[in-house]
Every structure is written in C-alpha cells, then in structure tokens.
Image (cartoon, rainbow, N blue to C red; front, side, top):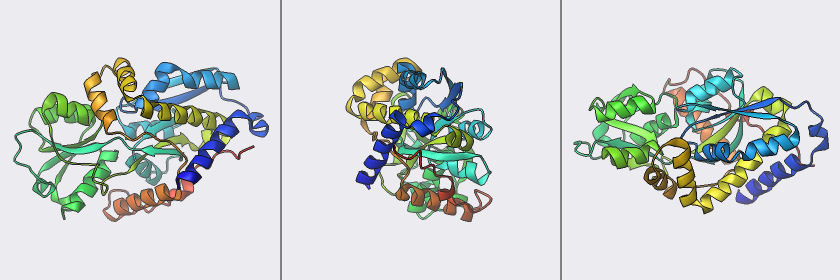
Length: 318
C-alpha cells in the first residue's frame, strides 16, 4: 500500500512538472482554497506562499484563501462553486455526496486526533456513561463519525444520547457553561480544551477503532478542467506535509503566529499527529464506504452512495 501510494504521489509530481498535453488547457485566473484553523498544513501553506509561487510559475496569477470554522460549510461552498479545493475530515464528504454536491476526493491524509471530552469533575467515566447525556459535536463533521463509532464500542446506539449539534465555537461556550455533558472535537480544539478548560478525555482516536482519514476535496469541474493545477497544488502540500512531520516545533510556532492559538496547544496537537499525504487508495474508499453505509442505515444520510464514483485519479504521468 505504501509503495503504491509513493508511486502515485510521484506521478503527481512528475505530471505537475512536465505534462505538455495538460498544460495546453486554459488556466484559471484564480484558485480558491478553503481552510480551517485546524488545517495546519493549509495554514502554513498560506503563510509561506508556496502554492502561490508554484502556480505563478504555471501561469495562474492569484490564490484566494477563504476561512471556515469546520468542514460542512466549507464543502457547501465547494459544491456551490465558490471554492476550488479544501481539506476536511471523513464525514463531510459523505454528507456532501449524499446531497448531490459536485465534488471529488483529490488526496488523503491522516485525521487530526479527536477526543470525547467531559468537564474535569464530571461523573462520566466511561463511554457507557454517555447514555441519556447531551453530547455536542458538529453535525456532518468528522466528530459526528467519531461519536457514532465511540458509542458503538460501548454497546450504545446514536439513539441512546441527546445529540447537540454545535460548531466548535458554540460548543466551547456550552462546554464551559455546563450546558452539555460531553463534547467530541478534533485538534487543536481538543488540545485547547485540555489546556485552558481542564477537559478530561473519556476516549480518543488513539483507539484504532475510532481512527479515520481526512481528505483534500476539489470541485469536480475544477479537477476535470485543471488537473495540472490541482496536481501542482497537491504536490506542494505533500512536500509541506513531509517537512511538517520533521519540524513539529517550528510548525507549532508558525501555526500559533498564523492563527492566534497558543504554541502550547499546537505543540500538544502536533505531538500526537501523523504527517503524510497521498492519493486516495482502495483502503480509503472502503473506509469511507463503510462510514456512508453506516450513516445511511441509521437514517443520518438520506440515500445510499457509491464513494468510488467521486475519487479523482489525477492526470496521467508523462
């Protein structure tokens, strides 16, 4: 699997460097990238202007960065054609595809760590104790899937809790105000809650039953019309991802400067993060299909979908 991923990632780089047939396609005047504060690689890319430099060499004069608080609104914008590329967790693409959004999976990367958090003095000690409790998470976010899987490990169903759909900002206020019993969220919000609010971890995604991947998603029309541009952006992000895994302290300092989130929280998040980026593999497709089938069976999404139908394979290597 790793060898196939490496070969495919190499094909991105080769296609992005020398692909005369693809280079003849009309180039966009601007590439619009959606990002979240938790998407440290995109935050770093924005700060260092590496994508701007790469695309200017191709003949694309401008890159526009658009910030979103979490994945579902980002993919709504992508589906509406207001964004060309963005990074989200595993669940937003499933909701987007079920809703008929015009997008494709462009690349895969390990998810940020997630956790089921409770206040320090909460009587909740185990996942089984969540029965009947108000559990907050972003509807359609990666935390939605972690919630479903965490409940299943304790023999609980989604109907055993009171789901409370909140964005990270609103969930922070509800958590601190004692208005929810538990909160499922990803880094760096997870690290911030531990550091600043004394949150206690009931379960986290070091439990391999709860782990998943994140994805770079692209507009379907953008990927079809500008494969060289997309391959070039992904190649820069791949290189930056590898650098980040080898320079975590420096990444934390850069992320803190760019986002206003303190270095300590970023350092905690990056200490437990995995850094890799490559094409979407059969294993990723199977993982996403299982997620989609589970959500469809629970009535969380309205219809059955075929994940493989929207996986972008990239331009052929020259």
